[in-house]
Length: 181
View 1 (cartoon, one colour):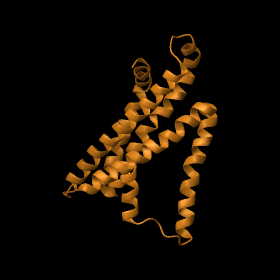
View 2 (tube, helix red, strand yellow):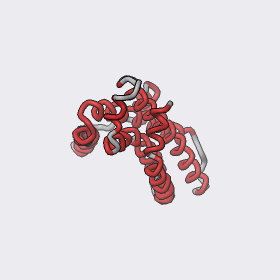
View 3 (tube, helix red, strand yellow):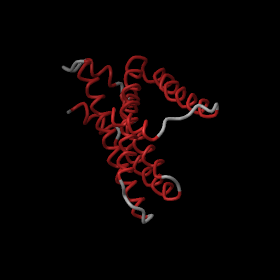
View 4 (tube, rainbow, N blue to C red):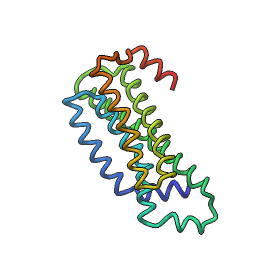
């Protein structure tokens, strides 16, 4: 609990920027697709767990933590819990914002919104499960490079495959993957 609170206190000022971004994305999504806000908010908030490593490095927390009666396993477990908390928080805030945008547009709120938010949540959890080990293994600076590679290579592959005429998964296949997750 103490390790998670430490990270929340460190990220308090950064969280204010996220709330401003949430408002900006809500306004932008009034004129665009609501999937934009669902994806951006969930991913942005989830990435805060990785951002906490930068704050730890700046404050030399790693050195101090070695003198405390806590194990490295406890520190890593706290980071994973923090990632889960942020992913869930991002999904909930995303759902609230998407629902508000839908209501302001006078559009019905259907099961598609829940599926959209859940898909973004599942993507955020997948991203955290890739990013945290890379950051822990390679450190903050090298981990960022690895994270960029992990994020951009699949995105570039999807774009190249779609331009090459390869059929993208159908809605039924996507729903199956979401249920499987």
